Length: 171
Image 1: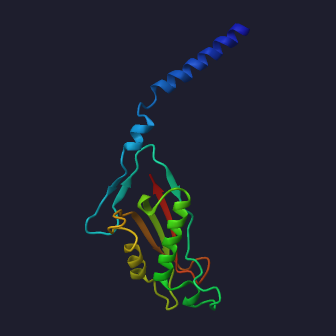
Image 2: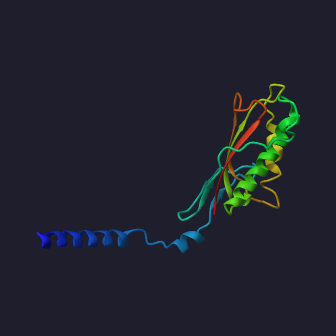
Image 3: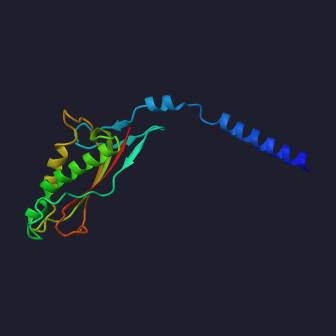
């Protein structure tokens, strides 16, 4: 009985070794050198898509919102969190800070998902968001563009908030 058990253990050990040796032959150092491929649209400020090779590190933020601009400001006013542009910039700054805590930077971001809510006048201020985006991506200090979805929503969790952004980075 002991010999059958020993033979089974040895067989299992050899099978695992064989599976490991037949696996992918790329070493981590080779994968780390494989670049992230950004599929550009030269006429657009965003990418068509992104290919991430095996072996990259990822970082996903939660949906982040703008910090309070003036804690003493009345609820329902732009003074509290700012208008769409100010909230966009504040949120991108929060993303930058959050990424840096994990050793990433804005240049590592390859995807953004943006939720825009109507302002006090009842309109989605697309241009304010696009302006803020252009101050952080696709420029000399950060030439990277990102794949992006920008979605209009009825409201965010706090009615004073006009934008929420999720970011995904890789390096």
